[in-house]
Structure formats: C-alpha cells, structure tokens
Length: 108
Image (cartoon, rainbow, N blue to C red; front, side, top):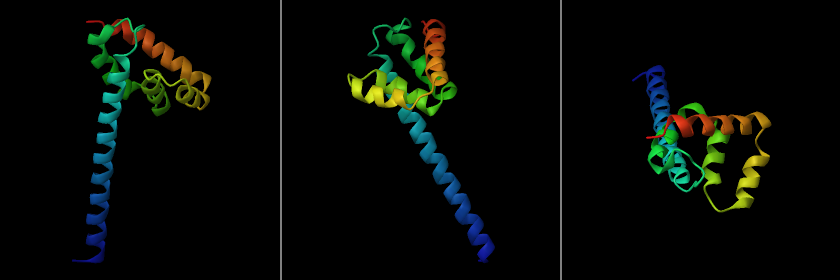
C-alpha cells in the first residue's frame, strides 16, 4: 500500500472517530438537558414537553447555552455562577428567548 493511500485511510478513520465522539457528546448533552428540564418547576411545557426542548436545544443553542441549561437544573449555585461568568449578555438573552419560545411551542 502506498504512503498516500495509508494517509488517506488514516485520515478517514480519524474523521469517522471524531464524528462518533461528536454524536455521542450530543446524545449525552441531550440526555443531560432532558434531565435538567424535568427538574425545572417553572418550565411551562412540563415534563412531557422536555424531550422536545432537549431536541431543540442541541440543534439551536451554543455549547455555552446548552451548558447553562444543564447546570441550571442542578442544585449547585456555585457551578451555575461559573457557567454564567463565561457567558455574554447575548448568550443569556438567547437562552431566555429559547426557553420562553419553546416552553410554549413544546407543550404537549
């Protein structure tokens, strides 16, 4: 096998590996957002709307915004403060708009 062919095969394997890691990470994030959503008493969509919110969050929000959704469902104000410190006002506004719109759109 030529060196060029070996390199191409190696790069293809790396690309596939990266895609699998990203897919697993997204699935884990979705599950974490779903679990967090179910702890939010203020979520108008209720627990039955949480799968819809989790699906939309992984598609529409930035990683920082998704992290905020996950951490906000845990009883850890220090962790939430750390996440919020790394967010811009636009990040926070985006989460607020997302939650407001999808709490209504995802109602069963």
